[in-house]
Length: 368
Image 1 (cartoon, rainbow, N blue to C red):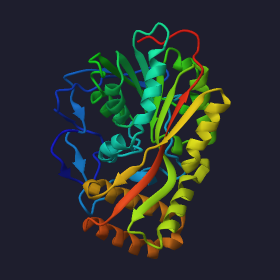
Image 2: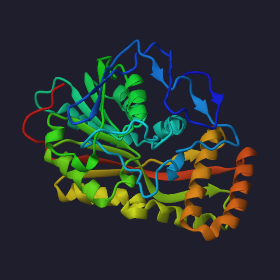
Image 3: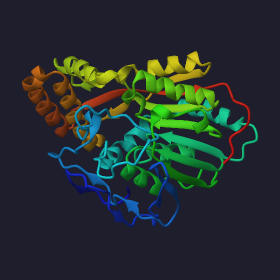
Image 4: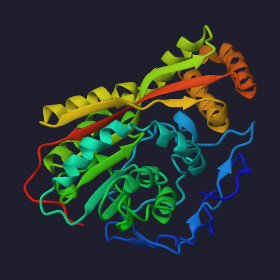
């Protein structure tokens, strides 16, 4: 994470160990049902993936960006939190660690800080609290924990959920170590299925978090998530869901067509895409939760050149996949956009939304 950047256009089949900040890689165990759990990671661990990898100008990170090209035909880029049986370790990752690493600082700058105060008030009012238990759903490389844990007071135990074992190992080994007041933060990692998330699974939870998750779920999965959180009386902070709006400066006549084609691509297979935040707000509100929504836009300028290149390629690529007749014009469009980025002239605002749902508290308190 904090190593020297190097140019690469490929993803290692499995993140390899290297020493950085002296962390120890998370150990693994397998439950009787075949579900793999990563044991709590702590200091003196080797960070999977090692040094940061930043793509070269002509490189496209497989699995990067919104298209998820590593998916097999018919698969959806949805996060599962619980699996029924043994899982295939050879399955390709859904998202490249390099892509998630590249976007992490921009995500951190975009997240809606205005939602933190009402969240802190709710967490401070938890009855009998001795510490926070936070479930991070679809954790990826763990960027939400690294952003949020140092902004909350008190001891915390983060339970990281993702279907990709490599990302889970990355997240557990690089998780936060201390809270805002210096209290200890511990981390563990689990694999599983969001469609099976229940209030019982969240028993004792203080908070559910997710980043860039809602828009890759369908309506039933969002309803399941809302039912689990509200049934457990557990707040949910769900950040960086695509809003379906992009602003590019300077503008181009093809902008709107690309935006519309990309949004249609996001909705394929019944996924909510840019409708996700509205659907989630409705699902939580119908179950008695108070819902707050704040904008969390990416602002990409000359200082975010590497991310802009990868985002542009993925964004335009998804639009063309959805509408192949755009191909010739989109190739010209992408060349000109990349040239403008190279000249330092391109500025992009990719709109996202953050949602905080505060259900009615359930009986009892969460204890770490």
